[in-house]
Image (cartoon, rainbow, N blue to C red; front, top):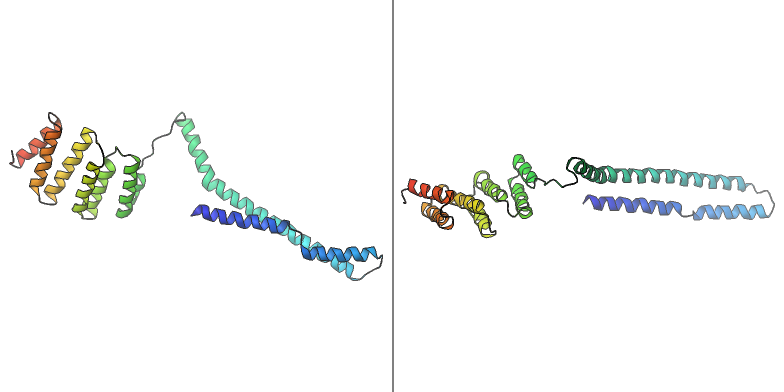
Amino acid sequence: MKWVIYLVLAVLVAGGWVMNSKPSPEMAAIQKKIDAATATNEEIEEVPKWQSQIDAKKDEKKFSGMLLAFLTAGLVGVVVVVEVLPIVAHRFTHSVYDSGEEVEADVMHDARSKVAQGDYHGAIEAFKIAAQNEPMNRLPWVEIAKIQRENLEDPAAAIQTIRTALEGQEWELNDAAYLLFRLAELYDEDNKDRMTAASILNQVMEQFPNTRHSANARHRLHEWGLI
């Protein structure tokens, strides 16, 4: 939107310069009368008045030119300060402190800011963008489910979020196990569906045998009296 505003202002300023550079038909008509009077070698009373009119028109054009120059400088200054300098400063900072290497941005910064502001739906959308930018990062999905469960009081949506994450990506072992444990937790604590939770823990044991994740799943099932 801001670039549209910049474009409109640039067009207006450019149009002003074009109009200001064009010769005034009124000035040309007056000058023609002066030239005609001069050619006759006759003293015509109106000539001084006509010359004053031309001088006034020239002063108007000079003033308009000065105003356009200020407007042009202002527009260029705004674009440079608001748009160009931050980019230059960013590149300079990285070239000095990071040997020219790009520092990985915290893709979840905007999402966390929205959570702090209480904009939970906006935070969810921002976390989804973060998940797209870092598809192998489980944290955006976990944060979305947390917001849905705790802030929006919608555990069903949280369950669907974790399922979507699990089904949409080939996760590393630790990430997949973590998401499965969160899913089991949601079914057990929020849906009061321990049997489904138990089946998910059994899935952990089957998929990741001889790992700490399998041992943790077995321990939880033992606590529930299902082993």
